[in-house]
Image (cartoon, rainbow, N blue to C red):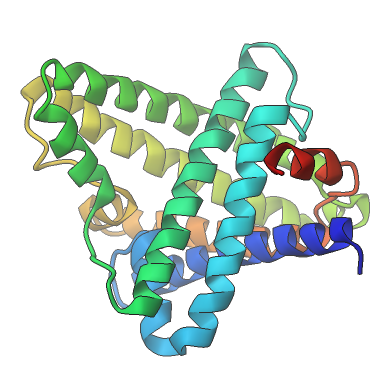
Amino acid sequence: MNVDARLTLLTRVGFATRGLLYLVIATLILRTGRAEDPSGALEYLGQGGGQLLLGVLTVGLIAYGIWRLADAAWDIERHGTDGKGWAERAGAGVSGIVHLALAWQAIGLMRGAAQSGDSTREGAQMALRLPGGWALVMIAAAILFALGAVQLVKAAKGSFLRYLDPRIVRQPWVRWSGRAGYAARGIVFLIIGWLLLNAGIEEQASGTGGMARVLGWLTHPFDLIVGAGLLGFGLFSLIEARFRRLQDVPIDSVTRKFI
């Protein structure tokens, strides 16, 4: 297997890792009412799967994070140079950073040195300690509103399907799992943005939080509806791991940028 094939395989492992984390999040909220985010799902898997599973997840998270950052830097997904394209590339960059942070947490779990906590709330608290920190929190809220809107547009238009092998796109369950997943993520991002906006206005971070906070905040049956959507996103991520078209990604040129 050559370098390109190995890097493509690792990217697919990254999609599968993302899918597994979302499946855990959805299963916990649907079966037990326990609200978690990707960080909490990673810790949950680490407790049940041991070092080997954490090692595989770490590799997948690193691969996916680098792939997303490469997309942000070199537009390997052909987003374009208009406003929408730049917004998607910015979202890819944020996603890359988040998944590399998750990889770092996985490494910490393997070493027994990880610390649990809500990174969104901690970040808001840190920002609000700075002069004019409320403005930083409100900028973060605006970014999340934009990301949430993009997710909802993708769910409505089904534009995410253009990256898949046409044979699998014909399956209705594939289309609807993706639509449900992107819609659920859009709702989560909008609510996180709303909580951050209120934190910026009130200069108080106690009410903020990430996905776990949102799932815990939603009342029945809306928590289950969003949880079912996140289950769809996990399934769709596994579909992407197998059927996403990556042959046009300039892996060699991207790799040389890092060497």
